[in-house]
Image (tube, rainbow, N blue to C red; front, side, top):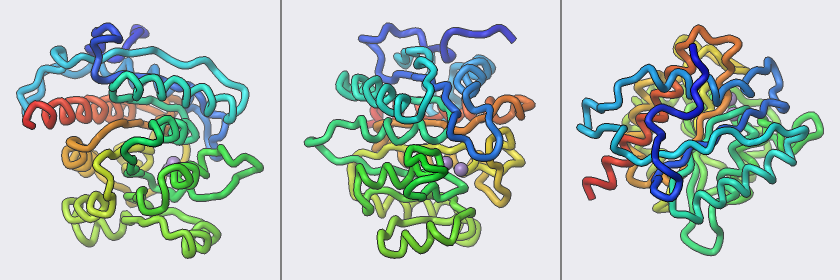
Length: 291
Ligand code: MN
Ligand code: MN
C-alpha cells in the first residue's frame, strides 16, 4: 500500500476546516505489547478504502472540510509528549475546530482533554475502554496509559467522565474508585441491558453540553479489533460504537482513537478505526446540518 500523507478526503486548508486530524506516533507507555506508534499512519492508509458518500445521512465526506496536520514529533518521554500534544490541540479548540487525534497509546488522550479551554463551558468525557485506566501511577509514571481516565478526571471532575465497556480492572483501582466515584457502564451491563439503554444511561450521566469521546480500540472485542496492545475478550461490537457516535454527535467537541497496533493487524482493526473516524465526522456534520 502506498503511504498516504493525509487522512482520506482531508483536503481542506486549515483555516477552512471544521475537523482537524492529528497523529501522535507515541507508544512508550504500552505495558504488554507495543506497536501503537504505527497507528496513525496505518489508520490513514486504511481510510482510503471507503467511499466518500454516506448512505445513511446523504452527506459526502468530500464536501466536509477536514484538514490533516500530519503527525507530531516523536518524544522520549510521556511528559514531553503530553506538553506538546496539549499545545497543538489547544490551538485547534481555540480556532473553533473539532480535533480528531489518532494514537498512539492511550497516554496520548489526556492532553487532548486538558487542552480544552478552561474558564468557559465545561467538558464531559465519554471514555470507551476494556480497562479502567485508573491507576494514580504505573511503573513510576503518572502519565502511563494505565492512568489516563484518572488524569482526565482530575481535569473535568468525577461527575463529568463515564467509562463505557470496561471489563478488566485491578482490585486497587476498584478500591480507589470507591471514594472517588467515577461512574462506569461495564461491558457486562451492556450485554445485559442492551447498547441503546446503556449509551443513553452513560450520556445521561454527563451533564455537560460538550462531550469529548476517547476510544481505546480495545473497548471493541478482539474478534473485531484484535490488533491492540492489551486485547480483552467480551467486548463491544463495532456497531455498538457506531451507535455511541451517532448518539453523542450533537454534543461532540473532540474525538480520539487510541491503541491500534498495526504489527498485529491483518487490516481489519485499522480499517475499523478509520471507519469510526469517518462515522464521527459524518455524524457531527449531520447533526450541525439538521439543527
Ligand atoms: Mn486505555
Ligand atoms: Mn484498554
